[in-house]
Length: 179
Image 1 (cartoon, helix red, strand yellow):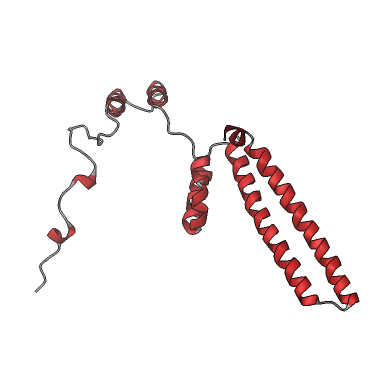
Image 2 (cartoon, helix red, strand yellow; image 1 turned 135 degrees about the horizontal axis):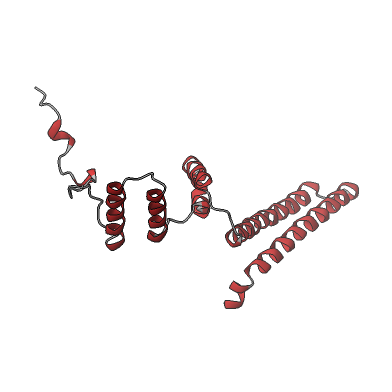
């Protein structure tokens, strides 16, 4: 099984070549057999139908192997990361649901910045004067809190949770009573 996984691209390429050659060869034999049936007075419809179905079957298998090969190559390729491209692909996947199975938007999405990278950006912004000392300390405290407990909800400066999904009131409580 390891050998097959290690040589997957080679096997898929060989399958594409063989099914393509088989489909072309079967198509040529079908044309020759049809011409022979026309000239010899044989059953033309049965000859055409048999070779046409066989050729279409091989073409279908060829398409499946070709898609698998392109997908395997795309997964191995070094793809530049771009949030703009990832967002566009996510919208396209929403419009055309079968594309979502390829997860192309995830392939192009840049990785989330680490806490260290975010700290460097925050420090650079403070040094360049984009942030006041109070803003820097507040954002640094938020960043360190996220690093200690990534699942915790963000809080504002007073320590009050800012996630609106935490509220328990429903819309029905705020609707006026109808008589």
